Length: 438
Image 1 (cartoon, rainbow, N blue to C red):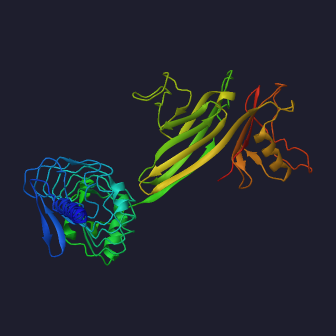
Image 2: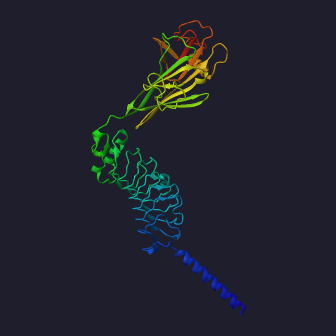
Image 3: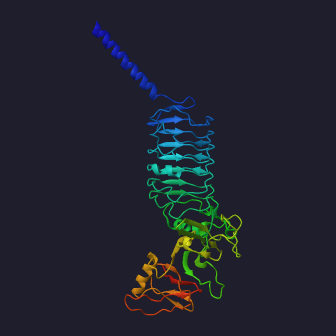
């Protein structure tokens, strides 16, 4: 009797467990319909006037439709309950923001439809986890920018729709990782037809990917090209930046000043015209200057970050950098960086202040004299310093203790003997310039 009672209790517990599991498997948010169709576990929440993703989905859902609702955004963890999702439909909502972590957990996702929303802020890094994705619809949104590596993990993607957005350009190589891509829509975007978009024309004309409506992949700017289809874009004069950093003596005939005036010039070439930036590493820290920061009169431009009306480092629009009162605090590495749509180029020079004859010559000085002993270094022609070999860029400013003027000339030196190598710039300051190309 006791055994029968115990068996009945166990059977009841098993039934309760099965009932609980069955209820869990059939759980579904109240506004939605959940069920099985064609072997897929489907949760249909479309046309429910929802303003948030409802909780309570079965964990085995593979297809979720939230289309035609009023969702304003997708927060982190929005689909944490449904990690097995293969299809997610979110078209025709009011989504503006897709937060980081909203889509990242969906590693099994094959189809994602975010079309016909207002998305301008999208967590592109979430796509890096969606390696199984085959269909991505992001058309009819407010996207203005796509990172170059946005699609780096989407090797299975077959169809990508980016049409009817606000894209002005696309970085070269954006579609390179999409090795399975067969269909791409990028029409009806306001493309700026500058040098940065030329690659897209070349790629679109040579790729096997189907790209419909090519006459609607057209220029919005510049005005002279407005309405021109990208496929018929005329050749543009484009070239990557090049820079040459040089020193131009500024002391000839000038009245002597307490501090030495150091002038560097960055000669920049490229099309479109590159933007120039100075990077200065001094003992006191790093200085970043977007050129220009002063007008032709040497006074700080309105809106610049200069602490005074005449900045310590004066970057002019013509590519020159002037340090009016050069001293120990200004020694260091001076780099000019030129950037345009096609790339960047950089040139640097090391500048140091030293006092000869005291045995305290710094590393830069030793480096110069080491090169001089090898027959390398610099020579002067008409008071201009010229390089003699492809070595490091070094400028050494020596403080003359004697104070007596003496002109420097280039000449041969016996092994181990120092070359004169000094260019007279003033009564109390001598400049030794060792400038060569990078």
